[in-house]
Length: 315
Image (cartoon, rainbow, N blue to C red; front, top):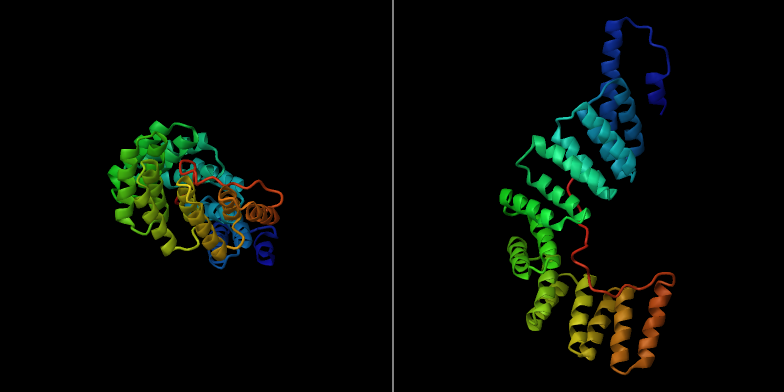
């Protein structure tokens, strides 16, 4: 901070032309010192540099970096204020509105997010990311039909847009349009055969349609690829429990707990399977273990709610 004090600590008695040169020099020092500080994870120092730089004059790159610095330290309200100032400075810059929409998403301010997206779309009409972000805002405002329409636009512009296919599949499942949802999931798995969430979504649809063998194989494939996927164990165990094959379910939960010893949901589900199989002592032991691991929290044993899962969105 001594460097910052040296820049701003005294009274400037220079001639106007010299003052302007000094201001430009100080601005450049502050801006690029801030960028270097960001690169070495010194966001606190970077923020001070960028704020001082903006005291000298507004600048697109400084606003952008300052907002990123705030966001990286969890200061999302400060990031939003910075971006609001940026869009006042450059009201026709879609980049600023896009960044603002992302921050509004993190703050769950979906009305503001939708407004920011619409401003950006005024100046950049063929950007699939903006259509995707608008869809996220529409979902937050419980306008799912409109969200699907924006995802249609995003996919029309970018036919390999995986996040858009996945999100549209969530919405189509919620709308009970399972045929279109399955088409989106299959497209996702064509683009990325290892995509675990898509594979589990497909398994869930297969289970609901009674194709339990195909669902079982899909879930097992996820576990084989990633033995730390908690949702896969819960979904496979649930499939066996629905079939009243409690011994198989218990084996699945045994495997989950061996890999993830503090997996509370697995203990809870194994407790239910053991109780259904007549092992009351084992069921009670698992209930106690779950309570030890999370004494102050109710255990959530439900399968993943695919319609409500939040995804990261691009900055």
